[in-house]
Length: 328
Image (cartoon, rainbow, N blue to C red):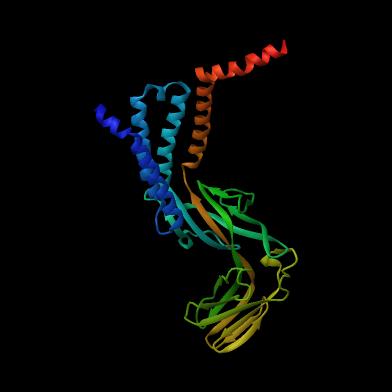
């Protein structure tokens, strides 16, 4: 049994664990097709290595040093648990629309994640993006309305919306979304928003194709009345910008302003108004908060060990005793 523990506590195994951890971090960060759940394996290996070392060496489990190593052990297990439960994704939300889990593109998901993103409920409100001269994005302010909370929540690139541990951050990905109403012949009217390419990244390609529920192909182009000047600061607020929607419907090219309609033998297309869509990145890792407090507790344990150790007391005595003699 002791020989087995010595093998698990081997410094060579420690080195191998850190090498595997580095490789896992590199692989998951450089290749999107590699799940970050692989980080859990070397983290668990290092936790076993540390636990075996603590059982063999009494000094590693006494006093402040014991507290530090205990926090380190629990922290590695928590990190592995968090990777198995994590979720990374992105989604585009139209102004005035409710969040739908089916619209989320999952980028990475731990095998123990329970799909909690499907239980989230909130609605996208208005948003604004401030630009500095030179088309440099300064900051983004997005308002969302969460179910059960009266006040609107503000979201930004560094100010997340947090619901049940899921964090939503705004991104540079956003654009226009014309709200359209289609009335087919002998069919019920349908209303929906069509997302145009990201703006101003694709400012010269604000075009899209949309097929109505009864199969009619509609081509769309958006033309702003007053495009922003690149050398000036400006505010991107889709609700305040005037634009013409150019529609190609069954071979006819029609220019529409909000409230106007385009007619065809198969139905009527009405341009209601111009909205915007905002892109979000989604992050979920339940281990983040426990890891924060474990780090603080571990630092406190390490400080406790340094202050109470004989080496630290001797060094402090060597510094303060000569200083006391000089002041006499």
